Image (cartoon, rainbow, N blue to C red; front, side, top):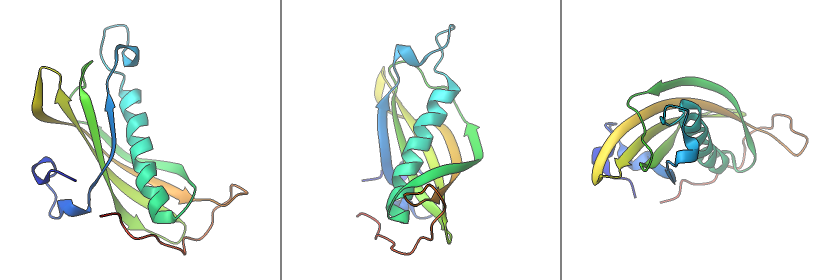
Length: 140
């Protein structure tokens, strides 16, 4: 279930908690900061979970249309990534993503850490684009 106060969109009921992960020391650079690439990877995985459902099958990432780092992620943060289908095309799914962190020292906190917009293409067993015809309903 999505916490409505987390997302400032008109209809937060369309957002789904797609992934929840703990930022670990292994995810840091030499200065001890969480790598931006780690957060991008988590967002891509989260977006793919929504795209797979919408496309009723395998998808591949074809474009990171936008990625904005809003605030840093620290070691020990619980990162929650919400996603929703923004556009469903003939073979593609565009997913909007919002990443939030709950700080280790303040588990009731919610810090917006990133926003993204990623496009996935549905592919068949041969790895080539396929039409999205069988659309599964959104989970409730």
